[in-house]
Image (cartoon, rainbow, N blue to C red):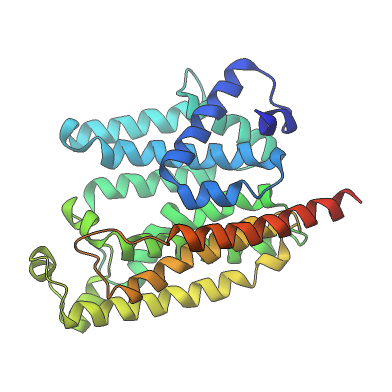
Length: 301
């Protein structure tokens, strides 16, 4: 509640809506939630609202599973899109609307995200990396763009935006690499078909559950590509307000650490989801907290 007070959110229904988003973030986005705690309290509700909305849309597409047909899911997404603009809305939408107004986040970013969610209803694979990047503009890059105003860059928006897009895409690619087995169970493969062909990996081979040499070589290639995006994104951290930098540095380090764990465990991506250990998470977050407190003190001065 301290963060809501700091953000000047006093309306009881809005406070409840933001709390719904915070709960979603805490339950489903542990790394993001941990990093968000390093932001000044007034900025945290906005991040929770953006995450909560994205998570809710994702649940419509994936977590409802066989409970809804593709047509019913498409109708739910259309209702969700329409509700952002007007009329009665789910709590996550109420919080999103308020955040969009407070931080001047354009509807075009929300539309692009929902367009990507609709693609997930009908598209199971992407031929080349550029095709995948087209999907990830909506599913990941625009999430970075939504965050830019909240992070208050010290340079013009257009200067900071490309780095934010790179970081959003790096996070998304990390998820794809970690979740190959889970996505396959949903009938999707987010590794480009051209890359599968290059390394001799087939859908049938993935469905067999065997992590063999070709798959390991493919994964190593994709990890290297993702690290290049993290390196690019890291250059943009210095462009943010000093009080926002520890949050992004922490998220970048911890999410990038998933790639380290994938390599260390020899890519068990068809069987389970790897994660960064609690010891490393605590150490990285502890260092981030020290930097965050120092940045806030200097900002007040």
